[in-house]
Amino acid sequence: MSSVLVVGSTAFDSIETPFGSRELCLGGSATYFSLAARLFTSVELVSVVGDDFPDEHRQLLRSCGVDLQGLETKPGKTFSWSGRYSADMNSRETLDVQLNTFGDFRPAVPAAYRDSAFVFLANGAPSTQASVLDQMGGTTFSVADTMNLWIDCARDDLLGLLERIDGLIVNDEEVKMLTGESNLIRAGRKVLDLGPKLVIVKKGEHGSFLFSNYFQYALPAYPTDVVVDPTGAGDSFAGGFMGFVAECDSLSLWNMKRAMAYGTVCASLTVEGFGVDAIAAANRERLERRYQDLIQFVSL
Amino acid sequence: MSSVLVVGSTAFDSIETPFGSRELCLGGSATYFSLAARLFTSVELVSVVGDDFPDEHRQLLRSCGVDLQGLETKPGKTFSWSGRYSADMNSRETLDVQLNTFGDFRPAVPAAYRDSAFVFLANGAPSTQASVLDQMGGTTFSVADTMNLWIDCARDDLLGLLERIDGLIVNDEEVKMLTGESNLIRAGRKVLDLGPKLVIVKKGEHGSFLFSNYFQYALPAYPTDVVVDPTGAGDSFAGGFMGFVAECDSLSLWNMKRAMAYGTVCASLTVEGFGVDAIAAANRERLERRYQDLIQFVSL
Image 1 (cartoon, each protein chain N blue to C red):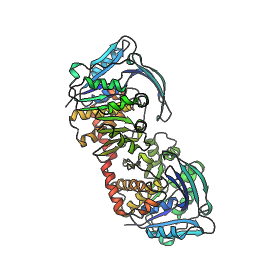
Image 2: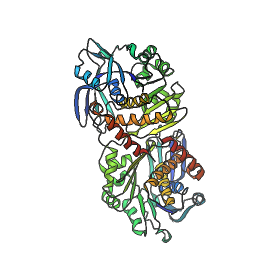
Image 3: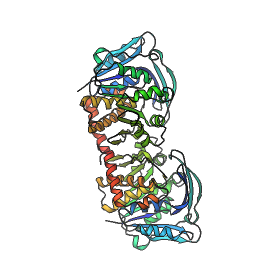
Image 4: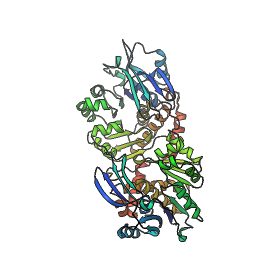
């Protein structure tokens, strides 16, 4: 069993969904990732917060087994995001973003983490993501997320990063935008020519695809009948995927497929509660029960 | 092995896609259904055409093993439809519809078909669909399709039909509209309260769901990288599904899942060519090869 290192944002989220709203709850890509991955293995978090970040959030993360050595506190405010979901939860509008201390995030990987074999670079500027790889020693499996902003405005940096990472986890719109292909299957395969050996495309309620030069795999989403808040589903998916792979310490084809299923399960747990409530309350037993349900649901 | 009876439209389609356009090619729900189902078992077609319907279309259907005893020819023109697909093929605009002889279609099931155990009622007025059931003797498995028009304008007739059929095959928008549920999983389950023991929801490129009171099943679409013309994909899916079930002559859980996979394969063959070109050219060997590919693609 290996630990997994994640570099990304820790944030205050304000969320409106048809089920209600919440102000300033714990959020951020690295947070969701960590709370999913810790169900499988130990998690090393590299992120930044302001001096307004409350001790209760640190305690929550620590009590979930997330190592906070790499969580830097800087003078100023914590990154905050607020958004509103549509009635069917399939789209959202960003109402406000305050980057604050995350704006000039220069991740410093603690010495103790530099040999971590499994690294996830959550969404961020490709140059910042690359700076993490520069600090690492014996990484065997590095995976990154990205977004439309970087595909648009930092394309060269992103292409440079793609040559250095093993896997990319993005959503369907992003992979089409990155490759200029309107057919998702062609788009996914085209990313393989840009460097990564593995491309995972998240399609929200429609499940996910895995592309590699050796095999392709498709997995439906878990049939969730009550989505309370979709925030963090994608990062939880990545956390479950990477957490399971690190736990197995193996990159076999079969493990990759199972890791997709565990990612799917983590995402389904996250969306059942507001913010991190549901994923933070989950345990391995709950996770395994739902994994079995999912397998049942998709097996011929 | 049982035969399968289909009642629905035979049409002239004029189609524009980003790949090109075709005028007045053979189309219609019952046509696509038949050309898929005949890959599994003998097909009995009940439909209507005008006296402008060319012999070559009849010959094509006959050469594919479709029984045309129930294909009525009436004075006047054949039903015609013309439509244009968006650049990503995910939406289409109907440019023209001429119901012609299909407008007052009163299906008369030939005596030789009345004991058919497997019946598919392709999209049509629910009262017309019900009139087919009135003529049948020993049907063991009846499945219907419907559309937004009937959900809106003939709701009571449709609800009456749902109490009489075993299965419903619809798309995601239709099932949400029928039940007033925005969550697809809840919507699918809710249809089970209206009568059918089986509900299949088609999601196009995102695959399909099966709902029953005993199990649920989700299957991704086949990873087609060149969609030439999506017309008829849904009817081909239904044809593959019903054709396989009729061939097996069994309604076991496992057969239902395999039938979904064969439906998926038939839809994927159809979209590779304009109109019925690709599905009419398919044979069992091609079908089985693609079935194995699909199983590979979705198996853990």
